Image 1: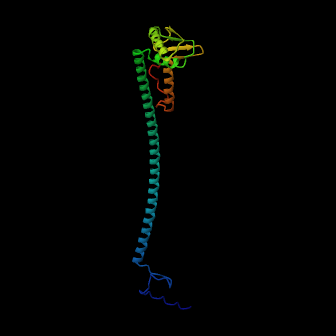
Image 2: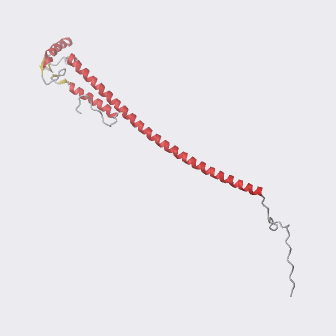
Image 3: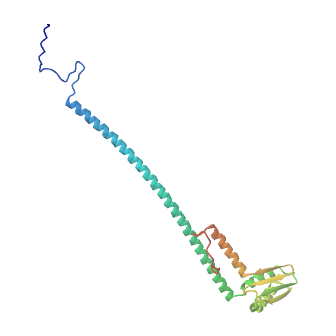
Length: 220
């Protein structure tokens, strides 16, 4: 029977950090450096992600603020337009009211003044017509007669003057007719024309409700 070889004795000089020629020994300092680098890389990546998220949130907040500012600006512009339109409407109403009151006061104080002015204009260009018929309110007939005769003499009109008082003609209004023409002074028609002009103006500058306000004296 073959004799068994004696087992090798264990020596305490074995280098456990080596595995043949290719084994390397990693000391504690190198391991700490690797850990520090890994931590720094993780922090940098986390910081970059955080900054990117913050930038995205800031951009979104800026866009939302810009949209809100645009909406508020549009509402402010609409409110300003409405206020300006209302102011224009109120100014037009006030001007119309003042004009009406002044006109009424002038008619009451000098009811024949407008008739006199119209007569002077007509008679100056009617020197060859045979007659002129003047219709006015009965209360003004005598005053208009005197005014017409005075104007005719002043302007050299030698035709016949006919003065007629008609109750349906308003005080201060008149109608002047001759053979091939005539003119009318109608306060109500003039007032309606003024109202139309005001409405045309207000139509270009609507009020907050989008409709022109009713003018003084109109039915609501």
